[in-house]
Amino acid sequence: MKKIVVFTGAGISAESGLSTFRDSDGLWEKYRVEDICTHEAWERNPQLLVDFYNARRRDALKAQPNAAHIAIARLQQAMPSTQIITQNVDDLHERAGAKNVVHLHGEITKLRSSINETATVPLEGWEQHYGDRHPDGSLLRPYIVFFGEGVPYFTLACDIASTADIMIVVGTSLNVYPAASLLQYAPDKAQIYLIDPGQPALSPYGARIQHIRKKATEGVPQLVESILSNAEE
Ligand code: APR
Image (cartoon, rainbow, N blue to C red; front, side, top):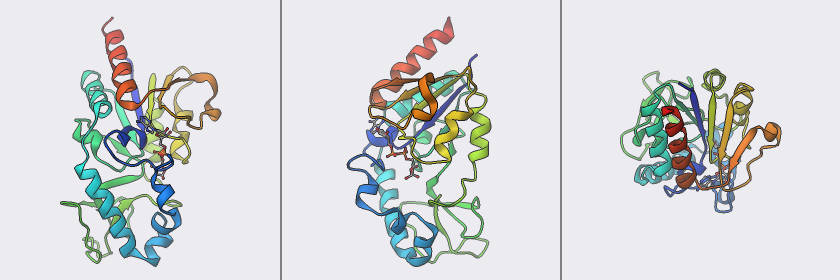
């Protein structure tokens, strides 16, 4: 049975009503990264970041998984070796039924220690109260990988990508490294499908990518259907 690795970005959650970052109405059109997504910003004005991520958490909890999230969960149920890596901090993959999702840039439903990047605690509801502390005594902060910080699970993600027979990439501009370089870890023989109505930065990957210029909720179910019907042959 073919090993499938799925790699998603903000575009897969766009049709669930969650903003992407670099589209015309994206988050980085409204906020400066240096104000809300760097360690310096956290040090400078932690309450601003707590408020910003509380608002994003509230939106994420109100959003529902869409047909693309559901199709990927169905694929994993039918082909259990399928592994899912996401740049997204929402939990829509999990709420669609996906298991063991690797979140490269954190999880909005969790908070983390200020001194240990992988020491997380679950957060009930949408609101973090600035000043609450982690069991290790440090101030709790949003479990978000800020720009310039390490990506703790990147090596794990590379190991997973290197096992792919098929890689399905959905809704990412491929602008942010090291995450975008995951495509380079797919074996040469792997088929790589990209589902995105826009024009991600594909040049480093050349002609080996089959770009399906469709929205996630149309392109992902169609591709999953095709893979599952071939798997039965
Ligand atoms: N279906 C599929 N793709 C879509 C849809 C849709 N309905 N709508 C938009 N897209 C695509 C856009 O064409 C674009 O290629 O989703 C992509 C969104 O790109 P970005 O906004 O850059 O999001 P992403 O690639 O996930 O950003 C990576 O950057 O800011 C950091 O940590 C943040 O994880 C994020 C990382």
